[in-house]
Length: 254
Image (cartoon, rainbow, N blue to C red; front, side, top):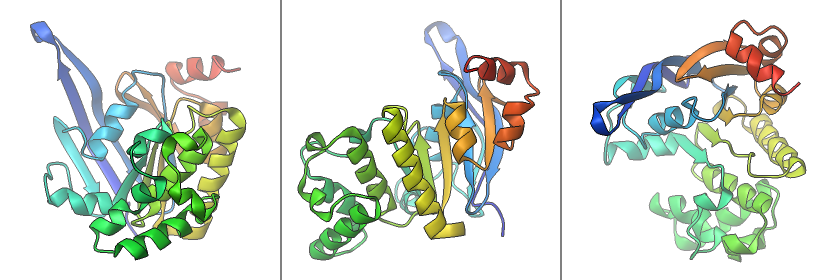
């Protein structure tokens, strides 16, 4: 079985006023295997979020390729992106960003189901089941984002992402806005989902906290100034870093 996701020499350059340029992502290549949790770490401004936005096609790449299950999606637009979003879903740093504040959590979770042809009643029932799967009572479907805690809202956001059974969950700093106890609860939930779904479910875990990546991920990529400067098993990268930036990053938390 091949990679579920391949990124090949992906590059993004932003042009500022006066024609100066900033290379946010510089020739990045990696693969994500079925059932794998791959961490990407680096300080703010290292290019992590720009990379994720290109993978999810929220931002166009200037060059390179994005291959999803053997299909190139780098230049897809419009209707062609629907099949991409059926395979990839994102969980954001701020839990409420996944929801319309004027609609209930249940409405938000069931939106993709209704768009896929589910009846309103069936979507409501499935939304309740997804909330329970993510550790919340089914009746939370009737609550609004502002009526729940940050941790509860993030659980609901994960339920929303799971609704169409994606192959890849992209977590962009999904725990950084939560306190330490709630961070662990969310990691435990993601770990449970991985065990339940096996090779049908892969996670791309974007994070600046190397300790969380060490605890949760199978492999880690280290980004610095738009490039991947190191990769490997988290314990190996942390205990025997080869790049000066990785050493500085680790020294900063010890």
